[in-house]
Length: 180
Length: 336
Picture 1: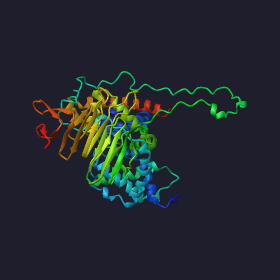
Picture 2 (picture 1 turned 45 degrees about the vertical axis):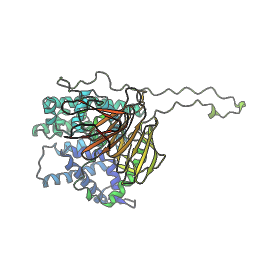
Picture 3 (picture 1 turned 60 degrees about the vertical axis):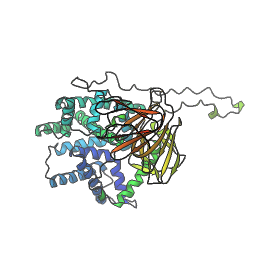
């Protein structure tokens, strides 16, 4: 069944859906495109393409896979235009990962998660906080961080994995508190 | 290398074809690994968002942002309005991680803590946050004596208060707002009204001259915003551990005339600009933030900074000013 949205403004519903899946789309595109600026441009393009294609969306089916298909098309067209061929997960793996992210990333729940993440980040030991600051607040590459802290890049992957794990555990505990 | 470590390498764009094939295999065949990687992706995305919000940066304009059609704007505004309404009750916290690069001031800003020599960061052995047990609701009393004519509901013991959520914590009150004044919540803004409360983590922006606003904290600390001023309240969550958090505001641009009331011992109020982080236990001063510099004019009280190079202390007494800017010597001069 083709979508014939009953609302007066189909674009509005399309963008509402995009916003409701924004983190999922962001994370999905993040798994393909590394450059932040390019990614932000592509997310804008994806939002517009979703709105323009809204009449083809079947509302009896979930939005996530449909939006990811559009995202994939927009992103790969862009990579092709730029003659970029990054090393990527295979298509099935990308979709499986996207679906898993979709299951995790319900936007209203993510707001609480963001709040929890902020608090948990502040409670990290100083060394870990510094690594988070370098990576996310100063947007440095692992190579740059490696030079700054004089660790090997492989040691950094281990360290960041542990930090992510600690943050994830903390966030889940905090969410339990938030949600009673 | 574990799948998550491999994923970090992949996200960095440093994975080989073999790495990507191995990762793809894990994602396709191992639900636990897939879940862990999805969690990692979401957390990575959210950390970037936390950083962007708390840094209080104006993101560089997207090269093609103009492409968003008017219909999108209408739709986004509709949804944003809902978010903003919630945000006005629910501001964002601002982790202190997002401090801007500051001038090398010895006092009052402490020097950065050096990285540990260990090969990995020391993660805490104990849980970061102890789980909190939900409050116990006492049992209802025995059936009321109807003869006393009391309604049953009147006899029900009061429920314990709900825990205060961050977005419910009022930090300050907007006492005056003239001209164009807007409350900021993330990328959203809504017109501010006198008498409106500013809750934890929200920001305030004034428009062109003669716009202005006056913000008063509960301890009588006053912040007067001049025209074209943008600030964001970014204190730690108050009362999280039963103590009052030190106040902290980010001033991105514009002019701020401040009267800091006496702060609790050891908890000076922090003012963070793109060029300096200054803490005051009680003083009156004016901050003027421009693109390349921050000017601090002391009206009452004093401020001590450290000069770049020899790190000699520079005292800024009342009636004097100092300019923090890259390449400019730190020197207190009298206000003419």
